[in-house]
Length: 104
Image (tube, rainbow, N blue to C red; front, side, top):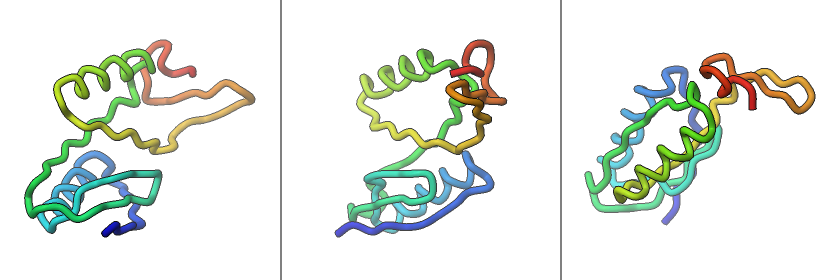
């Protein structure tokens, strides 16, 4: 059975990680995440453990390589936009990125 929950985090990394792990402790594993909606499905209690890492300060190619690395080790990865960018036409600027990662 699937369960869809609306949730917004002000403490994006730590708060989200604690909440996802509490959901896993209650018997729900993450199936899909969007900007404010999370979809879960039932699982065994404490079967999954979650870690949230902010990679918005890295260039797209670096995050893509990192994601491939984690998936190669058997981890399942999810990406989520926290929608902190400024756009002008087709140019986007990410204020927390470094170097070329600021402009995508």
